[in-house]
Length: 85
Image (tube, rainbow, N blue to C red; front, side, top):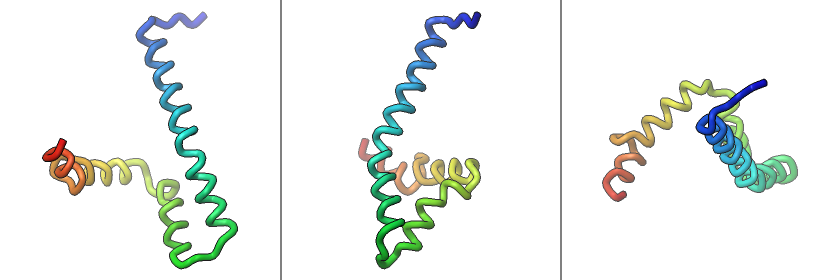
């Protein structure tokens, strides 16, 4: 039998909660984007399609580095957040 400590159980429940909330929050946007890409033709459709598929083709290290560059203390977004918040 698998015996977990209360701290481990709390961590697992938190991970499950974060996963469920993120799926529920992103599902409407994902369905709308999928419907738009499948059913409509519009200017910039290939760009939107590339942005949607970008996380699937980039390795996680490249995405992590990009997020670090953007949101780090000296990054484009991170510097503004650090100064104003």
